[in-house]
Every structure is written in structure tokens, then in C-alpha cells.
Amino acid sequence: MTMKPIQVGLLGIGTVGSGVFNVLQRNQDEISRRAGRGIEIAMVADLDVERAKSVVGSKVQVVNDARAVIANPDIDIVIELIGGYGVAKALVLEAIAAGKHVVTANKALLAVHGTEIFAAASAKGVMVAFEAAVAGGIPIIKALREGLTANRIQWIAGIINGTTNFILSEMRDKGLDFDVVLKEAQRLGYAEADPTFDIEGVDAAHKATIMSAIAFGIPVQFDKAYVEGITKLGAADIKYAEQLGYRIKLLGITKRAEKGIELRVHPSLVPSKRLIANVEGAMNAVVVQGDAVGTTLYYGKGAGSEPTASAVIADLVDIARLHTADPEHRVPHLAFQPDQISELPVLPIDEVETSYYLRLHVEDKPGVLADVTRILADQSISIDAMLQREPEEGEAQTDIIILTHLTIEKNMNAAIAKIESLDAVTGKVVRLRLENL
Image 1 (tube, rainbow, N blue to C red):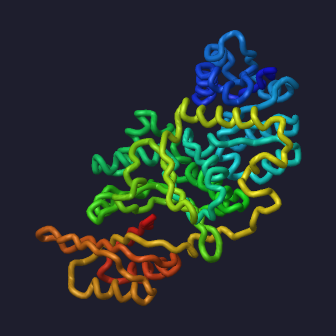
Image 2: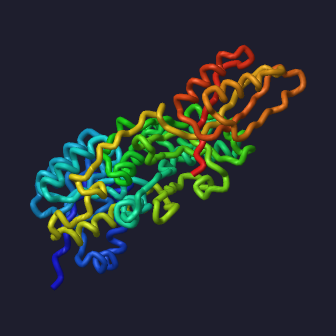
Image 3: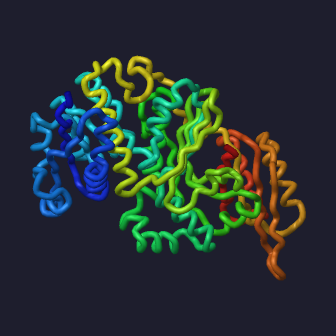
């Protein structure tokens, strides 16, 4: 006997919502062969009713009030594609309270309020699925939660924001500074009119926070993440990095360390020969290191209508299959059983251990380098490589680039303060972190 199609309500039919509708229509047969039953979008809520009708046609009920969808007893699953922390949070919690399963692409909401949302869902016996919240069409949540479940995950490093990766690729290709490339990215539609969330690293940090929780079995705690964007990055440093065999990428990093978990987003030098260093344009890639499997790489489109829809629909299929299973036998939201979530601390950036790239602007006179290396040695920081630019004819100053071995950030902070106070060093030291992965 075939079960009647599972009924879905869609909140928000913008770029991703229309992708979900179109892919579901196009691949209906294959999807129901996999799910064991049809999956049908029966109701759509969007403030722009006319536009919504132009996407879904006359067969689907369109309303302008999301609560009408949640109140409909025939709807089994609610897809939340509104975004943000405000009304989206209220609607997700109301849908759970009404006994609906929820599929969401809302990384901001889960990174900040996930603990509360997952607890509400567990108490009600419904699922909250969020594959689309991290890295668009790449099934990274599924890989971490299910495929790699045998492993003790050691670290994750990801290019998980397409806007910033596009900007960095352009800066490198054309030798231009950040501001120029941002304007171009906005013109081409890669960056929003207000690009703050992307360029300041916030979006990547939301995604890294979610991956961190799943990898290490800790609560989602975005407020503990260290977040630094790409706005201060100069073309000069991209060029120097290249000369030393590195590319600069905005990475979301989470790592198991001796005293806790590292959770940080910042520009990083990565060796050019690493696969992830060669991920260009708006593509996403995530590297996961597990003890049994070694290094694995997940690459693909991290945004866009149909790539993100691909992840949303995979979640719908999971729910259609597990809808009738008793809640104890489903995959836990954060991969670990809810009563087994650990209180491992997230380390402040001062306690993080990494390598560094330093650029010093110095007066070209004897003894400067000796002073600098002595200061680094006093903080037990060893030098890995160095590049000294020959000053042009008649120039009194030059750049020195230093790459260091692993050290604790607070030691590096102390060293930089001492270096900046040297008479021969002008201005601030440019400091970037370096990950060998």
C-alpha cells in the first residue's frame, strides 16, 4: 500500500524556497522512490503573495501569514527559510510546539539559539533538520553526524562563506585591495548591499559553531567563537604569502586541543599545495580530520537556489522515512545523545596554538633583525622562514616577513608589543595566523 504524500508547509519562498519547490517538482518520481512516499508542498507563506503564486501556480495554497501554516493540522513538516533571529525563532518554536517537524537553512538561529530549539524538539518528539544551514549543497552535517561517527574528530577547517572566498580570489588574481574588490562583488551580486555578516566573518562563525557542536559533542555556543573578517587584509600580504608558498583564505576552524576546544574564524595562510588552498570563487570546502579515516574533503556549492534546495530536500526525505520511528531511534540533533553533551570549554583566542605570519616595516639599518629574533626567542617562538624585501634606491625603510612555528597566541601578543616598541620598527606589525592543515 502506498502512504499518502507527506504534507509540507514552506515559510519564505525567495531564492532557496523557489529552488526547493522547483527541484521537488522536477525530481518528484525519484524522490518518492527513495522516500517511500510522496513529498508535497501543500502550503506556502510569503509576504509577497503574488510573487509566491507566480512560483507555485494555482494548486498550492499561498498565504501571507506564516502562523496559518503552523496552525494547519494537515501539515507534517514546516520548512523555515525566513532567516535571522527574530520572527524565525518564534515560528520555529511554535511549529515544534504544534508537533511539526522543522527543516531550516537558518545557521544564525541555530548557532545562537540551537540549545533551546533542540531541547524543545526533543521534548516534543519532533525532528529539526538543518543540513542546508552549513555549506549549502555539501552534505557536511550528514558526513559528520553519520558517515564519520566511528571517529574521534580531531579538527575541521572550512571555507564556508562564498562571498569572502570570491573576494579573496579576486584580490589575489588582480592584485587589488579589499575595498575595490568588495564594490565589484556587490555589483556582480556576490556580496549583499550590507555585506557585514559575510566580510566580518560572522556567517562563517555561525556555521563553524554548528560543526563544532556536532564534531565534539558540545553545546552550540556562538558567543564563545573568535571572529575576525577580511576587511583589513591588504594586497601586499596576499602577494608576500604567495612568494612564500601560501594562499590566504578565510577559514572556520574548530579543533580538539589539550585544554578544550578551539573555535575561531579568521584569515589564514594555507600552504598552496593543499587542496583547500585552491578552492576559488564562491565555492565552499570543508576538511575534516578523524583519527580512523585521516583527512577527508567535502567540496561544492555553498549557496544558491538549487544547491541549497538539494540539502533541504534531503532533510525532507530523512523526515519522511523516520517520521513514524520512535524518537529514541533517530539520529540525535548534535550527533551525540542529548544527555551525553560535554561541557568541554571553548578556549579564548589567547590560549589558541597556531603559527604566524608577521610583516614588519623597518628602517634599513644593522641590528634590527637581531633585536626582533631576540624578542621572539625570549617568548620561545622559533622562526620557520623569512623574507626581506630589498629597499628601492633611496628608500630608508623596508618590509621584513617572518613565518613562525607553533606558539600560543598570548606569547605572540607579548612579542608583537615588544617589537612595535623598537625604535627601528615603524607602525603596527601585520599579524596573520598560519595553518598547515
